Length: 347
Image (cartoon, rainbow, N blue to C red; front, side, top):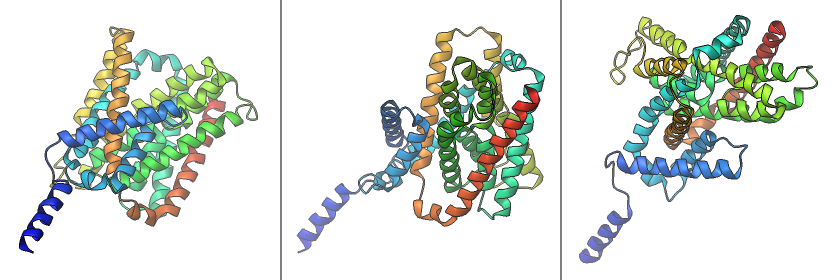
């Protein structure tokens, strides 16, 4: 009996994944998740790769055959992907925007975008706090809706040391509403009496993720798509000052923790983002380099979001479902209305 029990324990030990073993297993799993997300996007183009990456990460964390690995041996690498690769992807995001692009929009459009972002961020944050959403969800949802979807949520969560559940809830919500925009906004193009260029500016100012903006605006042709991308990238550029304001606010409230330490006034990845904007503005980078950087940026963010999804515990997310849904719907209507009014005022 003793021999049998010993043999059983050895078999069980071999079948059970070992504990944390460095970052390599988790990074390999994240890479596999990115590949799977790319295949999903190729098969169903309406599903952005970043969205697929989050969903696959959540699935990996709950599937019986993969959950032990995600929670154990792969955890270190997935955490590294969530934190470090997210910041690297945001830095490369700066190469999508040049100062000449912003100036070409005109100061009226720039002012309109600033007003829409401010109204959406403040209104969403205020309503989220009034609804009693836990943790950093009001802040993260406000950033995602007003700036650039999952990328903004990841950046704000990283600086604010937010709970992973709060981050994933916010990403899921902003992804859902952005996906709905792809179907709903083109139906309103004609009834609202917008030209193609005006429709593009409305989409750029009112839809969350860059991929969702492209998918929505392309339905009205190249003129709409060009305007939408420029306005959207202007919103992306506002991520840097918003993060800096958050850090200053955290310092004044004394919200430094032993785990995060005292954050710098301008986080290093934000400095990198601004440096990439400046580099793009010189016009020295060839189109091939920008294309490679764009692909790398999407892959890095997909890996980070897969890691983020893998940290989700679904039962804990279900407790705030109705309130989160109400905030998401209200914020979606708020930014669409504010953007539409802004387009009409600057037409």
